[in-house]
Image: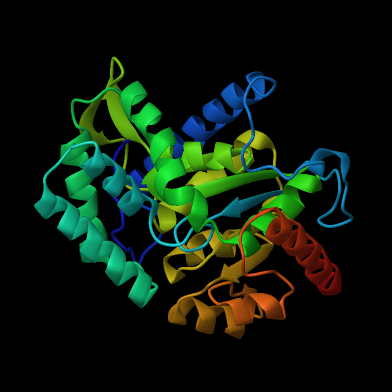
Length: 319
């Protein structure tokens, strides 16, 4: 997987490196999306709901091809951080030693308990991942990433957030993941969930081999907003008609860019910020909270179907 030179919060607007990272992520995302469209007839969609293509929910605006949805990944779509789960899979395959696994485990435990991104922990994870993947072929890590998704990530998808994404898909809108995780990891997850594609941190590779360097900087904070802006321009989207979803205050630049921002499983800072601006909030972290919006706590087709209906109803009330 590529690179994670990520997660250094910035208090100012996007730097030149942020713009470079955003543009690189948008280019990679569009390429992977086009590749996916070409092979759609031959690939199984493990995340799709049976019969979803035949249904056309009234919400969101059906057929609005100038609208799209952008979803943060870690703790928004999936419990925990993708890179930590990926690290577990690499350890199982003897890519690194036990002491490094212990560090990954501690970082993951912190993330789950605190519910927010810790810059020092994430920087450490980034450096570890870069040293681990340097010299490996992109194709090798992509193949391993498919296996790791099945082993550690598939059961950690939030049914409620997945339902919101499905509502956009059912309306004929494109849905993109936007994450500081490596673009290859993000692309695998997006494909498995039946989403359009992913914007992620782009690692440099030469002749299909990782160099251990990034293109620009990690896709975090302002860089995420730049990636969404670049993709919207390339796709002809109207950001005022688009939606964005995240759990972290670090993603306020991305959330502020669209006309329909959502705080999902928000950290304390984002919850306060969202409430002050009357942004929509959803919290799927407990069965009790999930039940309040009509989404079953258990995973599976039943949860997804129920969550989709709830998402449609909630959006209709907001219109």
